[in-house]
Length: 341
Image 1: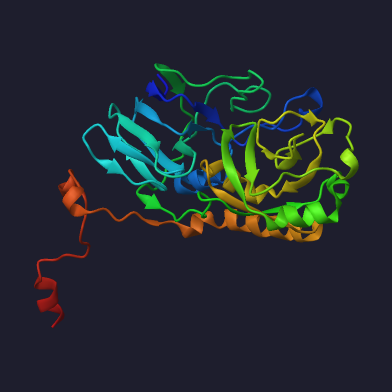
Image 2 (image 1 turned 45 degrees about the horizontal axis):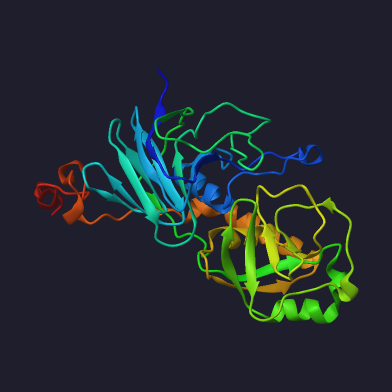
């Protein structure tokens, strides 16, 4: 029987996610995929596999999991408390070996919004339109439920007990944006004010969009103009009739009639995804040329993630299987030193 991941208890926001599916915008299906795509790259680096491997996305709360064979795992994204059945607590942003039959419990987020559980070989559920991710808004796939058994892909193997320092993205910050087709309709004064005021992430947020509340009055088009419904994409900043902006996320609709004041750069979208209610943001407009260079550097940084791995240091006082670890290497009986002299 092939290796499986058993979900004994599923939090309310668990789903299988990968990098999403492209090429279906004309059919009314947005890209979808992980809310925090960077977390997939981090998990791939920790396990030495491709970032396209499907993982479990956990929105706010994890669950209880078990594997049917010894399996390498990694934990990335919003940190959550991860505890083995024997009481051992696992480090976040690190890789581990999960023994067959040992249950792993993952609790609520300690910061951020979306945590990720990766497995060696990835989740190997059936492909749908070229991807394994659930697109919840369209009904393609579904949230995971208690008792789900998920097939695992073949793991090429590799090191565990490795860690990396993630890119900071859990507390809001600056979002760089490029102009959209309707930016000029807001007028230079409104666009400048949009970059001066501070916004706070509202409690209204999901995989379709995140509402940001400005300090002060909202934003409006000059003369109250309206726009035709047209193609929209993740990262677009739509301003609704009350002047409040929404940043569209991975499962956004594919067309919309609300005017867009700009579009957030893809490399800054993990900040939007991971922000908790109340997190503060500011916007900074950059040129298209600057955006291309920023994205080029971000892509290069993702490529360097494997080189940033370091061994996971564990506290011997908390290691239940202490005798199975080689704590000191190069130990001899001392006779070789006498012979050398």
